[in-house]
Amino acid sequence: MPQRLTESHTLTVRESTSDKPARLQLQLIDEGWGSSGYYSSKVLENAATAKVFAKGTKLFFDHPGETERHDRPERSVRDLAAVLAEDATYDPDRKGLVGEATIVGPYRDLLTDETFLDSIGMSIAAYADTTIGEAQGRKGTIVTNLTEAFSVDFVTFPGRGGKVLSVLESARAGRVSEASTEDTRRALIDALRGAYGAEDTWVWVQDFDPDQSLVWFTVESPDDWSTFQQGYSTDDAGAVTLADGDPTQVRARTEYVPVTTTDAAEASPKPPVAPAGSTPTHESPKEDTMPQIEEGRLAQLEADAGRVQTLESERDAATTERDEAREALAARDRTDQARTIITTQAREAGVAFTAMEERGLLAGLPVKDGALDESAYTDTVKEAAAEVAKAAGAGTVRGFGQTVDETDTTNTVTAEESRATVLGAFGMSPKGA
Image (cartoon, rainbow, N blue to C red; front, side, top):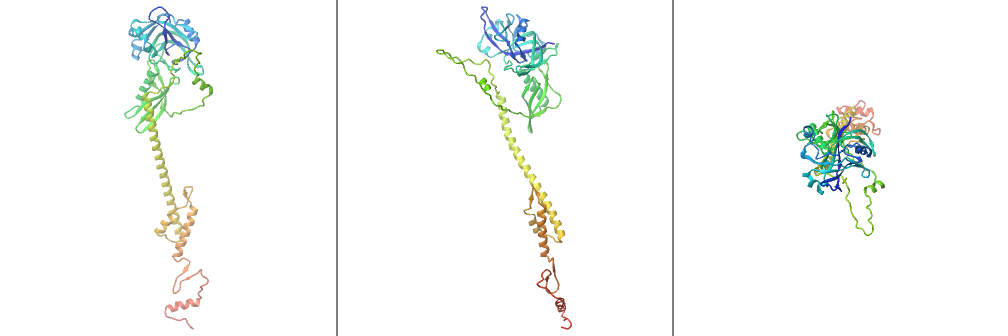
């Protein structure tokens, strides 16, 4: 079923060579990717043969608003600016549809003002058969046939640079209509703010792809700042409905690729050499394709850059705090493990460490792979326990008279000498003495 679409195109206009007053020679559309899809030269040639843009086709100022599309689809006479004075024909040199238009009287001065004409573009509105395919190495909507024209509008913001805008299904007899890039962006902002906006929560559109019906947007609150991707659909009035389900959190990625010799030559073509004796002339390009950043968007990017630096500082501080907390926890675990070893070895040796001795043992714990070196530390505690036991008299005999080290074989006391020492302590003498 044919669909209704509007195709935006940069206005090409010059004064007519005809002797009829107040006429303009217009190029309505040419071959290539437009704002609604790809138009082949064959499709445009067939449209000329079928007289789709016939004599009498009306040219209006501006696209109709959403309310007007429903309340006054035939448009207002106040916006009627010109009328095609002939059937649009196919120009093989331009590879597009061209035709003369007669300007409506009140607008003659305006539509012949050079500054005004340099600042506007054109947008066709017509029924068309479309499909999805590939042309010139690019995939998207392919217009296969233009069947009926409604109007040609003079607009201030036409689709440019082959940017493909969405072709929307219509609730009226299967027609489709196309919103401008700015209209779609505003509708997306309204839908996203309605879904995710709140007090102290801001939402803005980063980018969107009408071919895939995807939008990328950022949600910022005092505690969070994240970018998401979500699908959407639009109706004939241009209103946006977000796809069901939660959005997918994403991050932007910039890719740099080598510049080939061909790319460099195409990006910076050499100016033509003027013949000798002639005065060089400089022609401005037909279309400025250099991307521009709006002041509001630039300010937002600068604010985001400052916020990123702050977040990085906060992240580094949090990382340091985390590492310190982990080390403190590990140190506590090593100390608890060391205390257990001290208790065990003291019990086995039958000794008790003083508080000062225990503090000494806990100072400078041996560490291996971040944990206590149990083997080395156990040996250290065993040696300390043996020293304490020795100092307490372990391994010696204590009694009356001299204390003798049992391990000292050079100071041996006989049984008789020991008996005499004991009796002498009580004032007695051994018999036979």
